[in-house]
Image 1: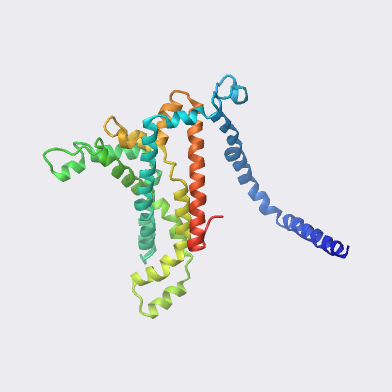
Image 2: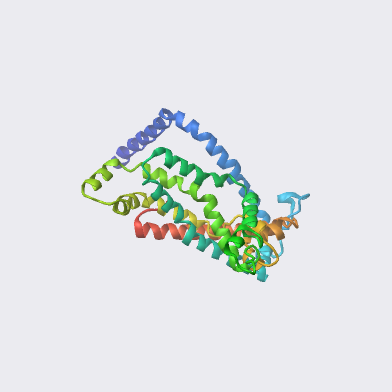
Length: 314
């Protein structure tokens, strides 16, 4: 009986202190409210529509009025039953892994090198120039690729070969052009978070290293890289968690009859089969499959990172 009498006030005090803390910081919760509303309306409410992946969805009948698919997983089986779908899964995974192996590290290297420039004006000019391509639409980027890498383009003139290389048509060049253009387009934008992490490093570390006679490379290796490593690991986890998600726009624009064998991704396949032909249940089923696989990969990558480096998202 004495145990209950002593434990109850502690709980009530904790509850009161929590309520007082909310009231004391009510301005912060008001500022957080728009973000919570946005997440509820645009991130959680649309998840209600996932049930059409298990239904024969008809626009006139609506989501609840449409009949259930027979069998319930018909559209998942339809996706895996074709060789094109399996090939698109392979292409998506290959491009994602190559992007992680190559493109992920370029912004980090760029941020480390940019941090070594002493003049603010020069550094900001370079950062602005590298940031600018991010605002170009994929239509413009693909048009630039077509101009530079066509049979009569600038690259073929520079190569000077008698027989022009059909960069935009040959399957073996698709991934190179896709990943290379992504690096050029997003390098400056993706480097911003690493540049921000480097600016938070105390100048005392650099001063002590310079007194000890450390070179620029040694300062990068022993100060900059360890300081931004938590950020690198977190970004890598997020990148791995999106391994099945590649936007369809650029790949679809770069596609032609000659390179479809390597350019057909899950997103382009869903766009052509699921959306252009109004097979919304099929498109939703594939999207749900992508999300589940990405979630499993994200959790696995997070667990591995937590065990190896003690850094994780959750």
